[in-house]
Image 1 (cartoon, helix red, strand yellow):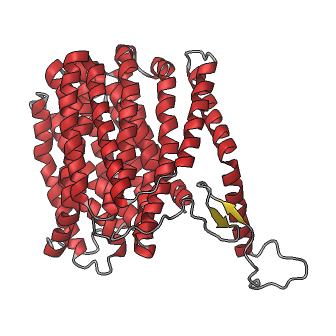
Image 2: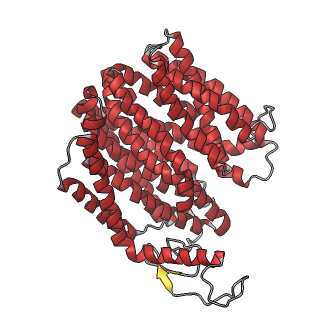
Image 3: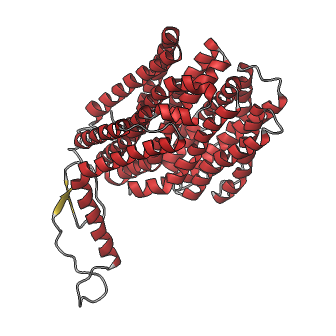
Length: 531
């Protein structure tokens, strides 16, 4: 089910971020470092606006709307929350423009305010679609804006200043996309606006700590840009932003590719079979997440010379060579914690502990980033962020393992490590030309080596699972009947021989669904709200 759901969400999790990735690359060939830094600063500040304005309500919606029986009071309250969040983006946008000294440019002010407000609303609409299982709406909300917004922004650079053109392109597409999505998701089926105390109290109780946690998480991820801009100016920020954004976005795309479908499955497991089943599902999610993030991170480090030489503009290359590998490592550690380990505390509704982790990481990031910048320049600042993320992940994992008995598939993780070593060796063993074709061959060689190593290492687990699913599918469709057997329901046969799963446990080959990670003994005294 996880793989099927992941594939259904794949276009949304791939195409939109791919357009953002292309934006960061294309702009290095069109913009000066100071202008590039301004645009990325505004985009980063808009992410803070989303966190402060609507993330607490969005988190509540994703967690509880699917099981909500009566939505009569929810819909008007949602309308009120979205309206208030959109209006609040005006002051946030003005503050960002004031920070970089651009409040006198009225065209840029109008485009930035429109971009902030429309993006905040669209972000919630996308997650609303995911909460109710409307993958088409979720995909449209996640992909149309970045793709068409990039194209329109590039076209507008012929008649508008670069910063205004970029902001205007994204804002126009997002504003045009909202009405059809609102109609499709029936967000205005009850068009009045009214705050509901019950829903607000529940949303703030669950999402309030996550709101604060999101703010501190934003500091951990974006704070380095404020520090560099304050210390060294917009040009240094532009030079840093290329490598930092490429590394962060590349890893985040892969993490969200899986987590968009993974966490709802863990929630469903808790509701249907209890907390232990939810933790088992999280363990499977985490194993697959490591299988995605580890090769992406190590592969980025292995091909950074070719990647930078082929994609990045000449003015940005030297700094990107230094920043990109560290940024990828920081993103991998943070996403592994956010989309795997920290979800343990979301399942047991210990959001206050998540808040504590984010506060610790933010404080450590700011302190170590400042020290690193003073001692080692931009590379030192990035290494400071890396140290903070590593320590926070270790602390979160230790508590999840010791206190809440989060299972880990040690054998599967060891095999993934071996496969990654084979991939790095394959990429480094041959010399590839510094051309787009050479980069493609280098990436393809690494991907093939990693896939072949996984198939070799997990073959004794994957093949029986695949055969079991094929047998179950054949039984459901009525194929494979012996000669002479009449149509209709088949007589139930004894279970076939057991076959091992990814973790070495046994599962029946006659089952239509296979759990990939075994359940440990129940944790004594662990309830849905117990610590």
